[in-house]
Amino acid sequence: MPLIAIIDDDPDILDASSLVLKSKGFDVITALNPNDGFKIVVEKKPDLIILDVMMDEPDDGFFLAQKFRKEKIQTPILMYTSVSKTIGLDFDKSEMVPVDDFVEKPISPDELVDKVVTLLKKAEERK
Image 1 (cartoon, rainbow, N blue to C red):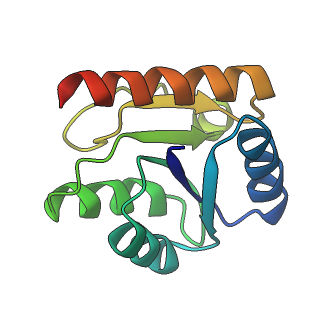
Image 2 (cartoon, helix red, strand yellow):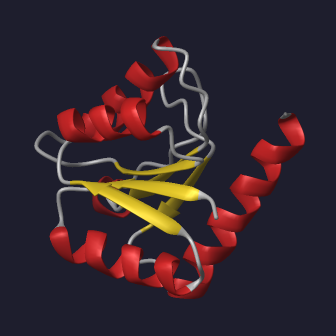
Image 3 (tube, rainbow, N blue to C red):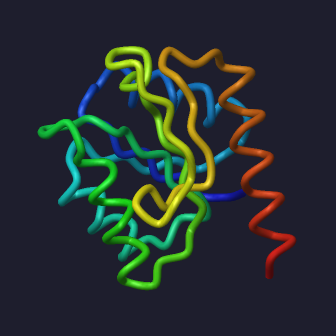
């Protein structure tokens, strides 16, 4: 089964997301901060990364996504955000925000699984 890395500083989000994905047969690893998140991605090489925008700093997720790409880590990234609702911005994929898709928190279990399956299929097609 595909391995999913979830990087979020909210333990409730980590637990809920992990529970949903594990119930669908995915293997899941988690990290509560960007440093640990970078380490698990480098060491475990997951098939997909779910990354929160705001952790210790409001833009930690953006910087971590950029760091992954600078290090040639091309793993698909699904970014959790509540930023656009909070500050009224709409993010789009770009070099500054090098992620494959965005999803607003809170996310329904069905939407989470749909997004994960879609991104994993797209990644497989690129190989």
